[in-house]
Image (cartoon, rainbow, N blue to C red; front, side, top):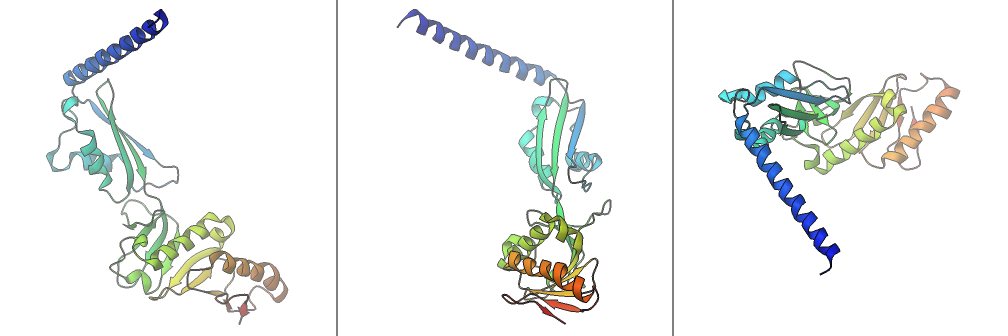
Length: 252
């Protein structure tokens, strides 16, 4: 073993020793600290405000749980994160402590992409990941409406639980990802068996979409209807356009 290898080993051992001492110091220091405050950071990149700082603090302190004033080494971070993620609108929670006695909470919210409005069930949101979420008394968001018999299914808890739910979620995402269709489509009426009828913002036509499949091809045909047929015939010349069938646009 040459001198260079000995130096490398000595440096590595010194570094490990330093890290162990530092970790021990931090643990001892935090063990002597009490929690002074809860610092909450909420990701609002989609301008959702279904969860606020007060909600987060209430979730942490419900049932008599003491956070502020508790010893820092007694705060179970994984347990805190799990408690927060039980909230329907919390997609992900991250908790950590700093050396000033703060408990830092970072929250990512679930993002609603559509609102279901049935006649029998209360209104509910659909998140980007397919969760079915309750509405909030403190905040509403402007999203596409899903109406008809299908939203009245009481067993509809997650769009990913059924093939029809997955297909409807893909259709919602396709519309929301396209600026033109997102601005045009206000409502989707869905029958029990999954047949979709689309209602648009500007024109008065009812768009019979059929099953939520062959999505790109159907919207390609609908764009032909908007760009080539309506400018020629007039925007209110037709009451209904059917794009269910392959290679056909049926206007009535």
